[in-house]
Image 1 (tube, helix red, strand yellow):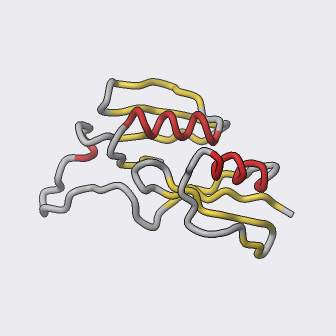
Image 2: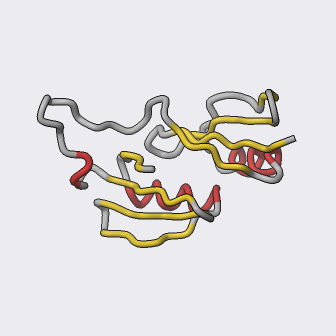
Length: 118
């Protein structure tokens, strides 16, 4: 999974502080790899090769409607901690088939779904 971000350091800090990822490697402000269990997230900043314009002119940008799902044990506690830290949440916790979920936004506008099975 790769996210394009505005600021690699801010993104790495967000995922480590709020979602318990660990740094695998970081190449300055251009690129980082972080991991949690069997998920590795590649974080590409504006100076990364992955952020270069495509031949047709499209430019990769942060944000959008693609995200990954991260299972948590206590969604209310995670959300309370994020709210206290000023993290932007796209919605309130909602219940659906199999559990509760909410979308949290990283500093570049990329979403992560937090999910707690019921």
